[in-house]
Length: 216
Image 1 (cartoon, rainbow, N blue to C red):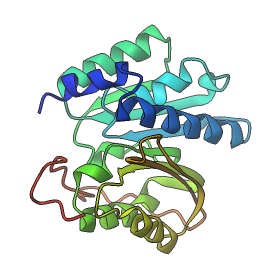
Image 2: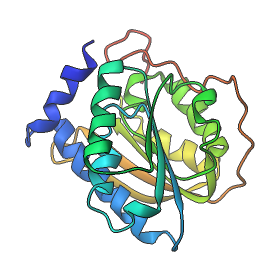
Image 3: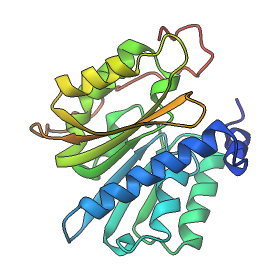
């Protein structure tokens, strides 16, 4: 998969990705607006070119409060994200070239107040989604907001994903569906007890949307 070319759909206003981006960015803005004054730590898992977070921070009044780590494995997308952060003069944004599925990628950046898990749950198996949600308390500060996405193609497991979040100490803030009904964007507040980061742990296997390994 050419993951840089995959991002081209963001430039097409009617594409599913572009519509999903609007919903994700709405939730990012809402999360920043809710947070009390002071510093904010943010994480983006499998950040791609950073559209979800950089696109909001570039114009948000809290931009100077935010220190963020975007984790992305694809070198071309890392280059694009770093350039976008630099052009927006977001000195607090770090784009880490690394494997977002491993907890090691988050050492020194947690606990975070805002965690984006966008474009992940549609590319992993259902058991891995559940395992990732179970591991999120390692990344989250108390009252952190987690924003996630998932397609709703049959079988639609978004109701199950919402249940898994509830089981792990999250309360739902929002659940939105794009115009096509194909993509869902959720926002959860972590009301449980933060956990210590366990380095060397794999949260999920990124197998790709069309992989036969996917079961939901």
